Amino acid sequence: MRISKIAFSLLQILLLFLLFSPGRSDELLRRKIGQMIMIGFNGTTVPESVRVDLAERNAGGVILLGRNCTSPLQIQQLTTAIRAAARTAPLIAVDQEGGVVARLNQSNGFDSTHTAYTLGTTYRSLDSTRHQAARMAGWLRSGGFTTTFAPVVDVNVNPQSPAIGHYGRSFSNNPFAVAQHAQVFIDEFHARGTMTALKHFPGHGSAGTDSHLQLPDITTTWADSELTPYRALIASQSVDMVMMGHLYDARLDSVYPTSLSSNAITGLLRQSLGYTGVVITDDLYGMRAITDRYSYGKAAELSINAGTDMLLYVWNTLSGGSLLRKMIDTLETKVLAGVIAESKINEAYARIQQLKARYLPSAVARDNFSKGVPREALLFQNYPNPFNPSTRIRFQIPEVEGQKSEPGRVTLIVFDVLGREVATLVNEELKSGSYEATFDATGLASGIYFYQLRAGSFAQTKKLTLLR
Image (cartoon, rainbow, N blue to C red; front, top):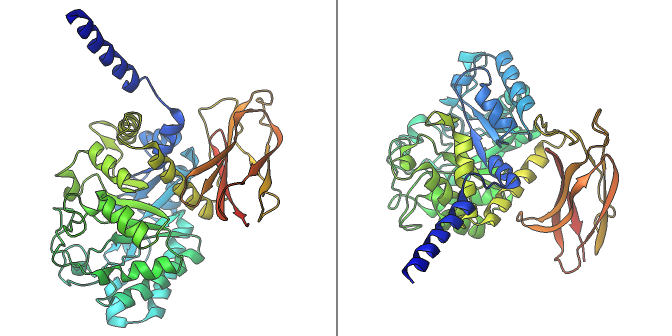
């Protein structure tokens, strides 16, 4: 009996080892996780390690800081190289608020800009905000950026707040004025095809400390009025992303900071305010509000389970190796162990792809590591659209020189507006040629759905409408 118990225990250990060992890998899962991570790096050219992260590990995006930008031409060459290396079209982001936090400025060939405070409180001019936002959006567009991490919609509750008020990063102490200036800012960037991100949810303006140095406690200083800009901008359907602040409010969550809190992200932002888009963290690499309390793996786990879609790290190495690879390994293991529900990964991935599809519709991903897979595919609009109860989706896989007879994996998946998979129409090896799939929506509710074609590393997403 004793021997059998020992044998049984050894068998359990063996099964756990086989289940969670590094050798067990789900490539599609790993690629989805890669899309959920944005990295930064040092230098003014693309390091080889970042090329590998973009090409092999499917990094979702890159953030460029002042250390990466020396001139307009250098920036253009850098963003072009980033796009060329990427397996899937990446977000290329920069903090371009204006004033102190403006990575493109007079030091690298652009102009100086006003702070949000100057525009919203000193000038009190929406026209001035519009004019400056248009100029900065033009710089980003010509420089090859897809995204600005702005506008700041923190309300200037505490003018001496070390991370916000002290640097003039808030438009006003009036939340309605903040919403108005932020809307103008967003409109100008959207007019030039550039995404924006509201920050720092649920509101950093009252904080008495800086989250770079410690966890700000806003339990007694934060007010519901700080949500006014979010309510207004979400209602206007102009929000691309929301960046979570690393903040603590015991009234909202007595255990976790807002960036790791389901109460803050899923409860307040998504359910109460009705936000359905992409949520991204503030930096998880060096901000002591998080790193003093949580390991990288634990912080990522908590944030994803709370409802976050993208994790931001301003560096790309960890303990001498690829941070992206280590995070993918860690998160894959947590998914396989059931610590993170795979549905969380799928929902985040779908929201990211939907966002990219709106702003990067013509971007063709490259795959330098897969043979027998077409590098381009053409997805036709479904017909009819709107439809009830079924519609046909036609697509073409073109010939690739030297690979005509070699099939490649093709998937065609339908998602609802929450990013949940509702149907897999195609999942097989296909050669070049024309194909058609039928989506039967019998039993599904009326509304907007998205369908995504993936052929190798190429991905394209389009919208369809079911009307009962």
